[in-house]
Image 1: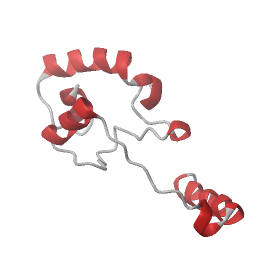
Image 2 (image 1 turned 120 degrees about the horizontal axis):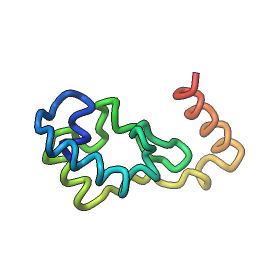
Image 3 (image 1 turned 180 degrees about the vertical axis):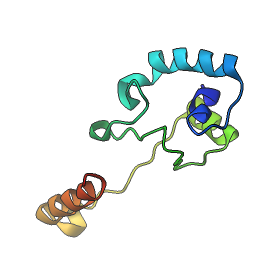
Length: 99
């Protein structure tokens, strides 16, 4: 699967591994990241085709993420900001990615 993900940015030339990874991707990952790996904001699943990697884009880091998963969690802000400000801030952040 690592080679399949690296293939989006032209960083894998192992055609057999890319093909095998594509089949595994559809079974294990497409439900959240989408059939074309473009991500799903509604569930917090990032785009895997844009060569932007929160935890590192090397083959070993991608493999580590696939093996152990990641729990990228932002701490709760409700008590600090209040519910209305959290709503406004969320709308602003969302607007940055949806022109």
